[in-house]
Length: 614
Image 1: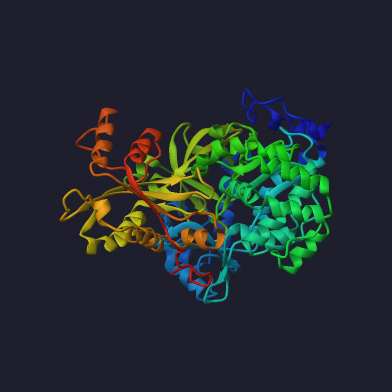
Image 2 (image 1 turned 135 degrees about the vertical axis):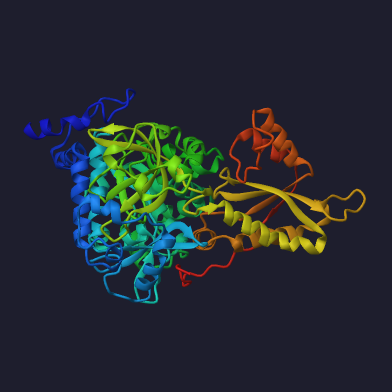
């Protein structure tokens, strides 16, 4: 009973919205984790001061901090006075040296164990984030806090399994021999994950061999068939991103007949060739004609509304990120799940893992994350300062952010990132004890995103310029353009709206008609070739983005767009064509003026061995 009393505060109003159900009793096994959260959030300033001192002491002899003139100091005042804010471009020369094999203490006093490839891009390619061995322990700690919090709201999660579609992505080696791979691939391939002790709260239907299979089709097929066989054990369904879960549903739509046949016979399709995957699935798959009949009945009707709860009837919630760019998928997920709640449990990035959602069953529009002050040293640049460039003197500590204000996140990590601008824009929504809670607002400067891809305005402009060069022999040019991330199809894809002008139009022939279909199809492919490697990998290797589409609109469409904006109060003197549109009436206006639609006819170039830091 003493343990229960010690953690009782975490089950109070700070964790629950007014609409939330009363929390379940705390199980003794969760008490230590919940108590840790309480301790970390009770005096965040003291924790942050200690974390900064630890980081600076560990990295005191590094070239970077020596160049800053820190001279071994570990106090906040010296740190603030001497260390500037940094962008990836500022750190890139140091990172390149590490990647090329320099093992001296450049950024970190501990050896860099690998690079984590960020989905944020630099000059069109993945960023390389240095990491160290004990960073895995901090990540594992944050993972271990998720279910104790969830258990306060959804009891009995230890009585079944999770159908989580988890995948590894391709990796490469730097010239110096260090692995460069996405953060989740790093985690799934680590001993922390592969040799994890049994945990009733994190019991997956997917065999580890299926998760670690690099072939996207074989991995998805094996995870899906195992999830179907164990359908009554499944209490939650998820993927890392909303788009990943929708890809799994689309996979079921395309492959249910073969899946049902495999389940009926108890034999896995020859299309899955990986021996370790076949062996792992053989331990689970048994002939089951009754289950095969259920799958055929549910999937053949053409009605996919609520398919998740029809196939997995005991599912209590979807475990999936639906904040930021993923919010565009919420209506589709509601359709396929029959309105199941969606839990966004954790906030993390390649640079560092940050914090938890302490009210995981709240509405997606209300998701806020509590930053755990032991993960790194947090600072915040007010967005009004960031808009004008900003400097280190304007940074605010974690304990001193103001309710309602928006900030750009700046971090100092154990792995050697110092006052690094992450590029995430956060808004303070409240507090848990003394720990601020933040809503993720957006990625700074990101224009288009389907999954882990991030395309900014400058990159889209370059892609349009490259593609429009194909129009010159036809005497046509792109007068105006805009875009949208189209997510009504699975997978989603980029849609680019072009208004064309013919320099010497023939009588009665518009610019759209003056350019042949094949050329406009090739324009789509040229745009894709100009986009970053994260986008191209998603197209080629992961299949998580569909072919880029160009919709040619009739002349005068963008004038109509301006007239519409002005009618809604925009200033005619300050109006600029938006390079990305999300407002449904504007999308409807554009679509009603489309004269032809074109798709990329082939996959863009991408190879897993290309250097990520070029």
